[in-house]
Image 1 (tube, one colour):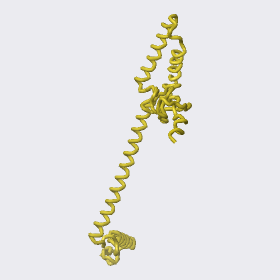
Image 2 (cartoon, one colour):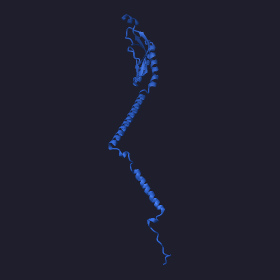
Image 3 (cartoon, helix red, strand yellow):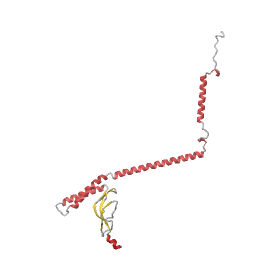
Image 4 (cartoon, one colour):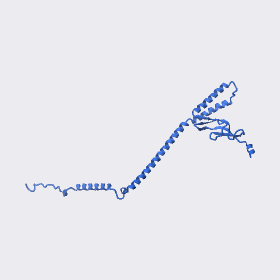
Length: 211
């Protein structure tokens, strides 16, 4: 066999490696070096803090979180109480407008009884029917906590009474209700309508005599 026919084997030495392979190796080394640098804590970072400083920071964070939780809980409780109060008021005073409209009916029945001649035998059965109707209406209102105010002879109370006039009266104490012109009503202890009354006042001559 001649020298020209002999095949020269390809060299497998590192020197014969392609430029592409060397580029890939260099890129891989660069990526590994970058990842190592990212995972390595920098100088002066939090890892250099003392355990005491870390504990103090955690305690401050715990106190702050606890305070925020307490504030949130208190606010939720206040909202719940307000909602419960609103629901209770809505239930207690749902009849306020309806009851207020019925007061005129009760007043008219009472006026009819006062104006009628009780001694007239002809209308006596009619008066008894009106009286029973008026009493039934007042009792029905009372079942729903609509209470009648009839302060005759009681001390004047501006929260529940409306003074229409003041008259000197030596027979009673000053600021005493001497006449009820129109009865008042309350709904669950809230004023629905004040009683229209006449109130006594001290006699002016008695003050001069004491002086």
